[in-house]
Image 1 (cartoon, rainbow, N blue to C red):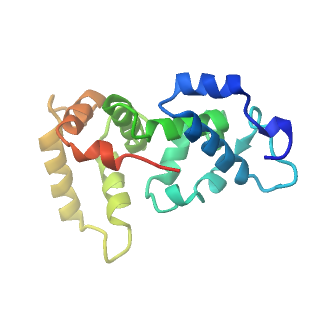
Image 2 (tube, one colour; image 1 turned 90 degrees about the vertical axis):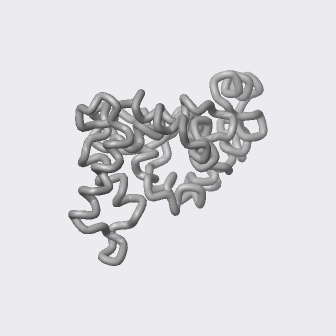
Length: 191
């Protein structure tokens, strides 16, 4: 880890432990991985003031195959440019939300934000269509027909839209997730 500016102090590690669901070892490994993604290996970044671009973050093997990798970066990014770049603290927040120790409420909150493509606070038909396309792939071989997509979205809304307003809000989403025991185990990233 090169210079002292690229290392975490004991105080920083303790604070990060208090603010996340990560262990000391996970925080130190996350820091190492974050620094490794920086191109200039001879001059590691001061991670207190450095952002990694989204194109570097999505190269992590843990995200590379995730169909929501760009959305994940955008949801966890605090960048004013809305470019999906991450600070080390953003990166820790991401890892914390995807950790085994995160609560169902935290995991479902972030999953909802990731699936809310238009950011309007609900999962409408357009969000659900994008969600399905991300999961099935958007090639001619895997893309659903218009009729199949319409039927699937209707089925999702029939199951999830408790107030029958044509969208799924966060509480409805969390209700559905609470009935899915596999959700917690599948919503994780392990470094």
